[in-house]
Image (cartoon, rainbow, N blue to C red; front, top):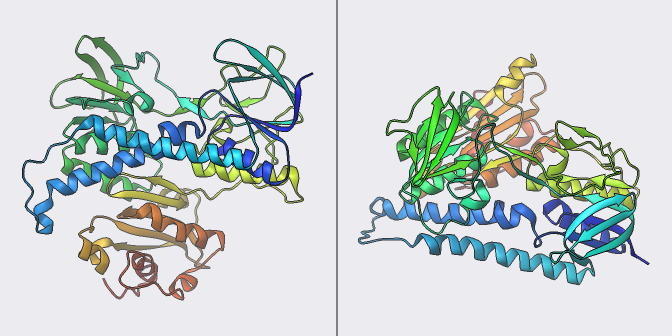
Length: 463
């Protein structure tokens, strides 16, 4: 007889492991089915290791400009394999932490490929080919997403890579073509450039980070130009030919200055739902644009089967996935009504950092919403001047009539930390007057938020 659980979670990323722990905290008998190790793409091959690499890139750039801080540094070199190894250790440490939480919460860890054979039943295929069957009152799908490619571009995962293979390189290539200038492409461009790689970044849209406010994208592009990163916008790669020493690309739009041959190519053009092997032959779940469809309670079209995280569509962000996990589990095991949020902060961790929440200026104009713009540069902030982090600005969009915060956009030092205040402000429907009534400590970077707010009504003091 198959072992029975209250909840079986398939997929152990930020959506799945949070959901499993939350369900266990409600006293439920929970099992996690995962083909690899705890943490999913985010922890093992995404958010955590990339942030370690980006910190090392920032350190490398500081060393290159040590004289700006009064230091004389000579003969500095780097061990690229050691740089990558440190990022892997960060992922290992976080994965071990999740293992500990699973043991503490008495969650069964079942390693293998989970397949839903029928409602209430999961077949797990182990690495050795053996099969085990488990029953559950409820099944939660959190299998995430995987990198997609473009038609005609073959991924050999050695020369033409996804972000996963890029995170495992032990030697820095001499040159790299990065296709796609969303957050992943931009972050890898910054990282490789810091370690002396010739980087060409290609984006089909008008701007890099195309979902961000245009002012943010334009400033970051200008900064990348100063780094020596070649940025080709309104350009696409139509073909790649893999050879012994790299790949040759065919471009439509702009062309690179130094030719079209590259040692490595990173394809960072988005993701698709990870559904491989998930459903048995008699199971059909509704899809929308290739992602699982769910109702307001995160239930699929089959009662008792739920889905959260990247597998149900954009935005493909770890914090969104974990938030959905909490909403879904609270909805299942308490009297709370689950929500689907519309306020999701977006963060890009290059330098300068980029972060945003809410509407862009373009979106507000399209919707015919009257608004005020408050913009304030970091170069006029005392803390930023003192630390040498003067690139960037805060741009706040407030409603013209009621002064409520409608959107916030930050480019600059610690932008990804500063955005939380503005997310909270939007959740609480804060106004210009509310923000100005909030004392911001001096000297801090957060003062830029107060100054940008004052600028929206023409009362900025420091500009």
